[in-house]
Length: 219
Image 1: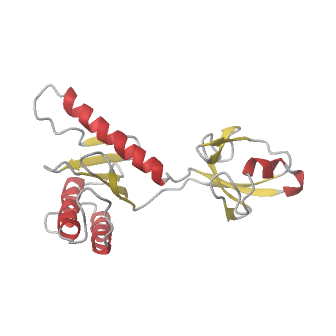
Image 2: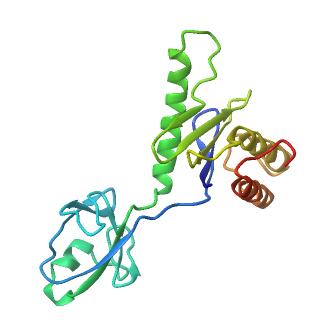
Image 3: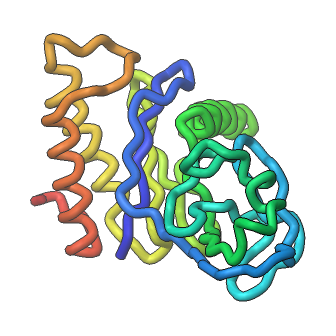
């Protein structure tokens, strides 16, 4: 089983911790001759495929590397604009690796804030008073699990749909937060968590949960 990532969101909707435990990378690499037979465009500081998907290359995939060198946003490793570089026939043949780009820090902050708002909407839509809000969202490839404490801190885990024991894992993460963040004299409430012991114990809890397929009360 796989646990993809962990998010901790404060009561104001700010992302104060995020850890990517496992990121599946569906990638495709191909050598092209001039002219390039797929259409690329700039999108959110990346270069993405807009038309011509084939051979595992999908619309929306980003350019990850050129000739084995990782790109930097919309520029090559040498700082040249990728689209301009690919217009020059002298740069061919060229090997390009495509895949889903990792979320940037700003995108993660935005998504955490959006989920905080959805959580509040879920509570307000409830026909009963005192709704817990969104506890789980399910897709065909992952489940999002959320546990909110009495003080409004949200612990969010993205995991494989078949992964069991996530409720116990969420409470274990809360316990780790209480022991290694809240009890840290240098930590300020509602602020980003930067604590090595918190990182180490969180990674250990995730590893145990993945190996066991669940996280029992005795773990």
